[in-house]
Image (cartoon, rainbow, N blue to C red; front, side, top):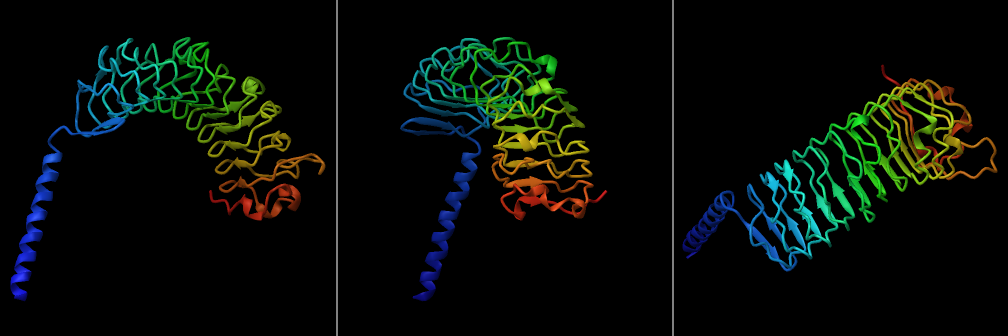
Length: 333
């Protein structure tokens, strides 16, 4: 009896395992559409946008396919669409009228494609627009005009130089986050939206910070300048952004702490590791007068610099939340 049960269990297990293997083989070879009440997700190697998408679709997930273009009528009638995800395709062309019916679209993700320019006639109510890692080398004037509800614009990992950003490229925008990392910028762009609260310029070729660089960006709270080639920061250049909370200037060529940090009353996080800083002054981070208000630092990173920690005067970090906020270590050449 026991033997019969074991035989039965063995064949039952073998039967279900065979079904799983066959199903897995099948799924890798056919086009699959997963539908749910408000959206569609396509799970296979599509080369074009499918026909007959349900008109009441709210979320359309077409990422990780081989779609090469968006034609004029591919998205026709999808008036209720909220999110369109075309990441990681082979897109090189988008028809100027492709988005004409997408009046309610909020999320448009076009990252990891082969686009060489920003599409025209973008949906007017977008709140997030992502072009990370395409082949965009220029942005024309008024490319984003009318996108007054746009909060996030990601243009990172495109071959954009300063000359590729036309004067007025960001006209008519009120975006809060602008990503221009991993590009070919040699100076800080001066014509970005004045509404920005976060600007990411990491992994560029910027060599200096000048007084006029941030005059337009008084609302800035987070600034990414890590992994550049910055050698100098001019006096007064950072005091033009009084609301700054977080600044990344790690992995540059700074020989001293940037001037003006102690005047930024809201500053809490400063990344300066992996530079060439040899000394820290008593007032480099904290106000001279104790009565001058300054939020307590939660992070000051200075590791991988040639500064000798035993030569830093104890009061240099008097406005840090605790000793754990200071990150230092022995410098290794």
